[in-house]
Structures are given as C-alpha cells and as structure tokens.
Length: 359
Ligand SMILES: NC(=O)c1ccc[n+]([C@@H]2O[C@H](COP(=O)([O-])OP(=O)(O)OC[C@H]3O[C@@H](n4cnc5c(N)ncnc54)[C@H](OP(=O)(O)O)[C@@H]3O)[C@@H](O)[C@H]2O)c1
Image (cartoon, rainbow, N blue to C red; front, side, top):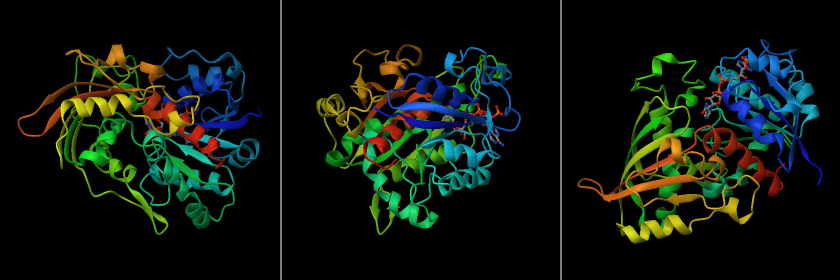
C-alpha cells in the first residue's frame, strides 16, 4: 500500500513529539517533514528537541537527522511535499487560523489540535466514534476557502475526551439534560512536565485559562447536526464545568454528575458502555481501541497512573457509578490527554478521513 506523506507542524512540542512517535511505525503514514518555529528551523530534529526542557522523550531514530523546517516561512514547500499535515503549534489564535487556512488554500489538508478553528460552523470537530458524519461538511468548507483538496478538520479539547464518550452511548435513549463536571488535568496538557514546572509539585492550581468554556460548549458542537451547510450545535445537555490542574504527568480525570430525561438504570448504563462501538471500530482504523469504553467495578478505579495507557492511551476508563442525591447519577472517567486527547485523537481522525476518501 502506498503510504500517505505527512508533515508535522509543531513537531518539537509536547503534542508534536507524540505525533512523531505515533507516526514512526504507522502502517498508512510516512513522515516526510518536521516543522516548528524559526527558532528550530535549520537544526537537526534531535538537537531542536534537546533544547526543550523535557528530555524524557526519546527521538525516533528515523527522525534524528531530519532538518526541521519553518512551519510558517516554508509552508509552500511543505504543502507541496505532503499529502496532509498535523498541526499542534503554540501561537496566537489568529496566527494559527491564518496558518491553517493558508495550508488548506495550498491544497494541503490540515488535521489540527489547536482550538483556533474549532467553533467555525463548517470545520468538522470530530471524535471518530461519536460524530464521524460531521466530515460531510468538508465540501461546504472547501467552497468557502476556494479549494479543491484542502480543508481543516480538528479534534476537540482534551478536557472533554473522557466525559463526552461516557455520555454519548446514553444520549439517544435516555437524553442527558444536565451535566456537572469537575476535571483534574495533567501538567502535559499545558505543554509541560513536572520537571519543567516545579511550582506544580505538591500543588493544585484552580484555573486553566479558557478551559471551562471549551468544556461546556465544545460537546454541543460534537453532538450537533449538519443543516443548511453548517454544523448546528445541540441544545442539550446543559453543561457546567470546573477545571483544575493537578500534579500528575499525563491523564485527565473527570468527576461527572448527570441527570437524564429518562433515568437509566445502573445495568442499562453499564451495558451501553460495554457494548458501545463507533465508526473507528467499524472501519478497524489502525489507531482505534478495540473496546472504546472500559467500565471498572472496583471502588478505586480508574486511577490516572494505572489506567491512562489503556489500549495505548486511546480508550476511556469509567468507574465509581453511583446514584446521587442531587443529580440522577455520578461517576468518574479518565482519558489520556496527549494520546486520545491530542496526537492519538488527531491520528485517528486522519485515518478516518483517509478511509472515507477525503484525503
Ligand atoms: N498538550 C496537550 O495535551 C494538548 C492537548 C490538546 C491540544 N493542545 C494544543 O496543541 C498545541 C500545541 O501544544 P503543545 O502542548 O504541544 O505546545 P508546546 O509543547 O509548547 O509546543 C509548541 C510547538 O509550536 C511551535 N511553535 C511555537 N511558535 C511557533 C511559530 N511562531 N511558528 C511555528 N511553530 C511555532 C514550537 O516550536 P519551537 O520548538 O521551535 O518553539 C513547538 O513545536 C496548542 O495549541 C495546544 O493548545 C495541547
């Protein structure tokens, strides 16, 4: 099989390095370009990565000597050499949007981890198990951008990658109407490690800029529908969120409280979680977990350290299902923020787009 040639924009960063690791032995993708800022361009990839503080990452052998390109200045060359690019750059929102649209207009599809284009009504924001059908909005976006091949597809924020999958199998039958969620988010979500962020040791920071708004609104786009050339957000459930940073390296855990139009039984909830499979499983995409949702009956699971790497960090773990005094049910769920929540989720989306013929 001919492999798709890919580029990674932001390849030296926390998410970009995960992209590089996931792409190294990918059956469909071959990395031909690694790009970052002008600070890194012209350097060997290994040297550019070594200048960043996290030394725990071992650079895949195949990429060590690749010369890093400038994601902005070299975009024409990068677009010509690749079938599509992954994008995870730390820049101002309007600059990211300009950059991603420029690649799309150069007829190079962009699979993005950034939030800059997420709420645009013709940009699909996809969790392949949940709303794979949203990629059908791409022709509308291509019309706006004036492209034949280029488009932008995005993945959602990492904070919601545990509780949206947990609520989704309950949606059609039981209709969640009111959800309260508190997230306990790892330091890698801020592009940092415990070594590079010593203030986090023995500490909890009760603020992550912009995260609560994303956690409350992005699920409604994911559960939205395509109508008249736009993705129309779902009206329910109404979600309220508090997001805090905790001193763990990887893994975002969420405490969820939910009330439903029709209250499901405990057995019904566990049965829906255990049997749930989406388009990613149906198409047997290479990065898809075999079982997307793992339910634990033990009182002390899921735990961040023990369970975050479930199915290579692509599965979601759920546990502690109990009736609540104010909401119908409460439970805990967990997903790996830089795997399912970032690079892995984007790789899975790219696989979906390739399998369905959009790339
Ligand atoms: N970490 C997560 O769990 C996570 C999850 C979901 C989404 N995201 C999003 O993914 C993006 C990247 O996050 P991260 O944690 O990987 O950040 P990061 O570790 O700080 O890496 C940022 C990357 O962007 C590059 N960059 C910075 N300024 C640039 C410029 N002017 N032109 C081109 N490249 C530039 C950096 O290159 P240099 O090395 O040359 O500076 C580096 O490769 C952010 O938008 C973030 O919100 C992160």
